[in-house]
Every structure is written in structure tokens, then in C-alpha cells.
Amino acid sequence: MNRGPPRQTPDRLSKRCAFILGNAYAPRTKRSYRSQLASWLRFCNSRHLTPLRAEPVHVAEYLAELSTRLSAFRSCQAYANAVSLYFRALGRSDPCESPMVKLVRGLRRCLSRQQRSREPFRVADLLKLHAHLDQRLKSDIAFWAAVLAAWWGMLRKANVTTQSGQLDLWCDLAASSIVFSEYDCELTVRHSKTNQFGDRVQRVFLPKLPDGSLGVLCTFRALERQLRTNRIGQAPRPVHLFSTWSSAGWLPLTASRFDSRLRSLCTSAGLSPREFTGHGLRRGGATAAMQLGVPLPMIKKLGDWKGNSVFRYLSARDSDARAAVHGLARRVGAL
Image (spheres, rainbow, N blue to C red):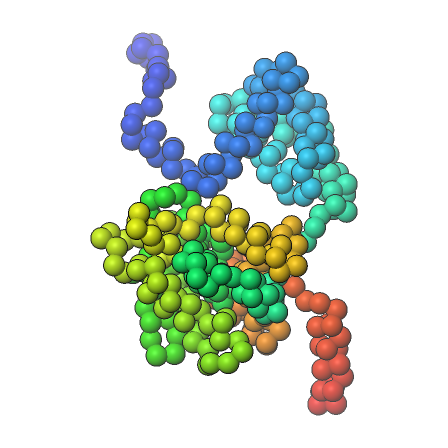
């Protein structure tokens, strides 16, 4: 029976297919995979291995070597996932599925003792940072507005920064993203780690604080000052909400600039830059809400958390636990 000519696999993908495949992952995810894959290729080169012919024992040795450079198990796991994707994407058998590689999860026991927890920024920490700001610098005005928006809004660092010099209205915040009212301002966030396809809109409400000693923590006033000082609404085309204006134009607040300034301020304020990072702002806002009695479902909504991952962001000190127990003791008679 004649079944016709055999099917042939096309030598090249169509432009449409290549475009769709290229958008399978978010830009930040692709950058991470590129970096992690480069690490695997360097390892293979140093061992004179052909990357796609590597055996499970080689992957196990690679992870063991990574454990001498990386301090967190989850980081090693991310590098292993990149190797797994590399083999699967090229239609090869995945060595990471080998029992030998899976047993390397013993790294978790080895690295757990070395992990350093990321501290949440508490109110006192924010005041320390503010004391070392240079209020004359337009860049510090933009930075401080971003810090407060991230803390009060429980936003990720990626929400208040941009990855490139060009504004992406799909992902980045602009002047059009904010609306002021009498008592608060509202940020519209259309893209985030848990909302990469714009299925919904996250509305972030930032309160206006009364004048007083904590007035420097008022996001409302910080954003007003940012818009006014850095002329965000006067740009000929939309610019990033936390840009810095100069005669040369508007310089967006990138993640690297944000991290650099935060490390500098933490050092000046006596806070460890290793323990206090940009993610500590999101964690700090959630922790403050918990301590003030905001119900967990509302914290999840405010911070746009999915599932129970929010628990990793809530940080309670021993003094908080002691106060909770004594509070129960005072109310136990009402049961």
C-alpha cells in the first residue's frame, strides 16, 4: 500500500513559530536560563565533556561543585532545572531524572546551615535609610518614592524598576499608572511575576499619612514630589514612573541602580546589605500588616500572592510570639 512520500522535518522554523517559542518565557526568566546554561557549558568545557553527551554522574558532580559557590539550595535547584530544560528542549534524554541526580537533593541538608535569611524592612529600618538620603539629589527622590511604593504596596522590586532603558507600558509603571485622590493614591499594576499575561489588573492603594514624625514614610507625598521634581508628566513621551530628570533627558530606575543605591544606604545606616535586599521591602510591608492585625486573606490580596507562598514573607520575632501568647492568656476566660 502506497503511503506517499515520508514526512520531512523542516530545516528552519517559520517566523511565527519562532516568535511564539521565543515568548514561552518572560524576559527575566530567559536571562536567568541563559546565565545558568552558560555555567553548565563552562563546567563541561573545563572537564572536556560534550554537553549533550553528559551522563547523570557529570550532572551530580556539577551540582556538587555549585554547592561550593552558591549558599542556597533553591539556587542550585534552579541551575539543575536549566540543565534539564537544555536536554529536553533539544529532544535528548534528561539526565536530571536519574536517581543519582535526584539524590543530590541532599544538598538541602548541607546548605541549609549556610543560608542567610533576608530581613524585612521595619519602620525603624526605613527611618534609618531616610536619614542617609540626600534630599538634594533628584535620583534619591525617585529612589525613595520607589522604596515606599514597594513597602506600602507589598510590591516586588521588579514592579518599581525597569530592566532596560526603554519603557515597556505592558510591564512598567508610568505617570498614567497613578491616580491621586484626597486620602490616597492608586497604582495600577498590569504585569507581575504571577500575572505575566495580563489576565487581571492589580490595584495598589497607597495611603496619605498625617503630618508628623512618620510623615517621611508617606508614599502619597513622596510620589507627588517625584512627579513634580523629576517632571514625569512633562516628558514628550511616557517615561518610567521613577525616572530621574536631567538636561539630557529621563533616566529610568533600573533594577541594578536600585540595588546599588539600596546597598549604599544600608551600609551607611548600619544595616547588612546581605540581609536587607530589595525583596525585604515587600516582606516588610506584609510583616507590618500582620503585626497590625490585617487578616491573612487581605494581606494575600494586597500583595497579590497566590497559594500559601505568602507565609515565606511573614516574619514574626520572638517578642511578637510572646505578645501573642500573653494576649491569648488575657482573653482565655472569654472562651
